[in-house]
Length: 373
Ligand code: CXF
Ligand code: ZN
Image (cartoon, rainbow, N blue to C red; front, side, top):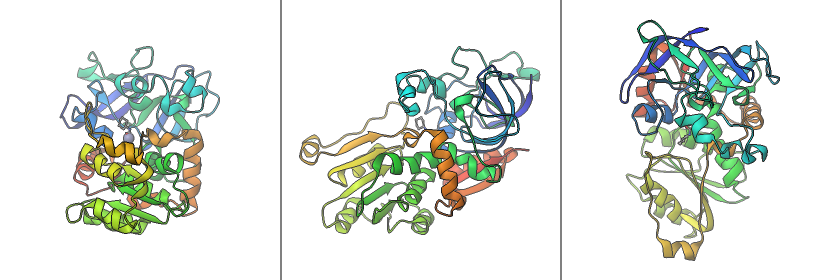
């Protein structure tokens, strides 16, 4: 069995501990990736905190980038030595997968979150030494890439050019894909539209960068952190709002002559902010929901107002992306200088994962990316 170093979360609320683990060799449709970099996303931290369900102990990490080490006998799309991004898993068999909508895969939740193993229930990871006999859950988003090796399904890997730095490729697999895809695939602002982005984290800032690729003429970024508002401006926001100092609804109304924005994106994961985002919409506007509050959270809306104004509220998973199509496009945009992902990334060695997680949680760093030894 291949041996790797991984950051393991043993129990809810625990830190990450670096441990030696054993990774199963690839089955026919699986790919073993030598991970070069893995981004930290809030979902990793929310699982660690117990707010998003995933069985522990486990290896998390779901924005991997690396090199193919070995492939199963039926794999045709990548070969050893290829450079790849690792994105989410999908079954490839259900109607949604057959309709080109892997984000709506009938088995999405189990394959990416709740399972912790292969679809057939077999484990992909094992502890070593004193942990040999206890369970270790893997296959987080089909990958568990906070490790030097990741075993993933063939559908989760995307071949990418070898000359793009792993720290750039990694966050494309979730955070960047989510924000950019929400704007480019779902909201699709029309010429002259106004877009409000609530929350300027990695997803919100990716949405702002993507908005600059559209003909939206006003892009409002709302975030209480001054440094994030500044970065949002540099990345393409035409207006920024500090919700602690100004009511976003008033700023939006002022900016749009009282009409509201045609498009909004809620990335903060706070139900009361979702309410603000929906209330800020123009008649017939659309609000994408990508921020996830803890499981079971509910939001409230003014129902008569909804009848009057006809907002659409759309949950958007992973930017509604088909990773094999979208990630290469994001890379081309990055290389053309049109999607400056480097502006949100900071590298940390795997051994500094705790420092990186703190930097993400406190907001000091937008997108920490772990680089593997
Ligand atoms: C998450 C968003 C919250 C629900 C689970 C999936 N996506 C990426 O991290
Ligand atoms: Zn994520």
